[in-house]
Length: 474
Image (cartoon, rainbow, N blue to C red; front, side):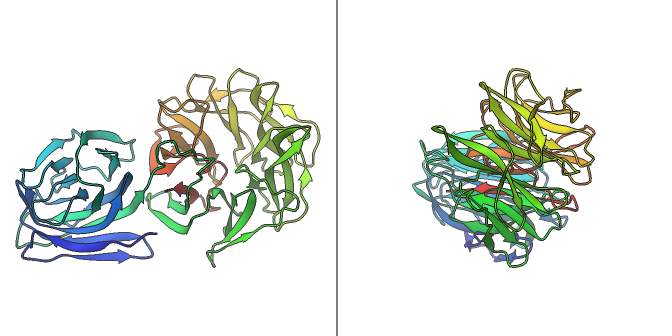
């Protein structure tokens, strides 16, 4: 994780602050004082980095302790310079819960604000897109709401960072910032396929929502699987598959023989012995994806599907079947096939894209995503294709529902509604969302920059407490 932050006291407060970074938890604890951040003068503690161009700056925030002044403040800021009367814009959370965009448009002017109707959020976000700054917030694991969008000329390079102000010259307040992420989105016209981004391999603790970056690389990696014994992850990068050891925290290439054009549709059998892969091959002048199986330790791939394109997504718990998305005669549908090879069986026939089929751990259902309702939503059916029923009904494009090993939860990736239903592109602000497997309220467990490659395949830890995924930044 990039921890190259510097700290400074803005406005010369009587009591200085300090910053503690917890390396294991990847959290920041800020202590700071300061009379106020208002009118034409600011006093506060600032933990910052210099950034040029567009960015998405996010964090979970909370005050530590009851505090003294209800107007104490924490948040995320972009600032022109370190003078007390500098131009700036922030997302600010007060001790009494009041939240909004605060800003000083020009140096020396008075501060202004755009308040939010939602108070005391747990997650806040400040984005710069050109000269436009956008404030978004979330409370109680709900989707982000936009508080304000406003243009400011703060200069090409700004200092972005976390801040704390006690609103009392004789008091030091404390706040915790977690899941701190600075994401640099793709430039205009940059395509995720032609210009793939660097990657962050992350582990999400589902109950708390805490995220930990375990590996950062300039290479583009995708779709982590978690081994059945919990000792390693498997992901793909540049056509190859890699084993990422949980102890050494280093990747090692898996021998997949002639299969050197693997995509992000791969996964491990329930007994942990076999890996299903989707490898692109050139046949009769057509390059398409074919499903193979290979021993988990590597070896010579065995071809399973005769026809392509075929994209693997699930093993049956008894290891006898593979389920996948395939295009036949212009239609993308869900199929299954014996894991030893044989005749494929079509399970869905309704017009529209059906994708991402995955067995529940008890083998009673196959979950999949479908555009048949007009939006991409999660569905499920019996393993023979019968009793197809819709599971999600909201205004998001929901993809790749992965059942937890204990059968209690589904985790999915959700795109905003403006993304076309049949598309799951790179370089998007997306959500990972959690839903009880037997139905119920869907909660957001992570906001991130990602999309294609983030969580295409099963990635739960064996104990159903954590999920592995990939986020991206340029």
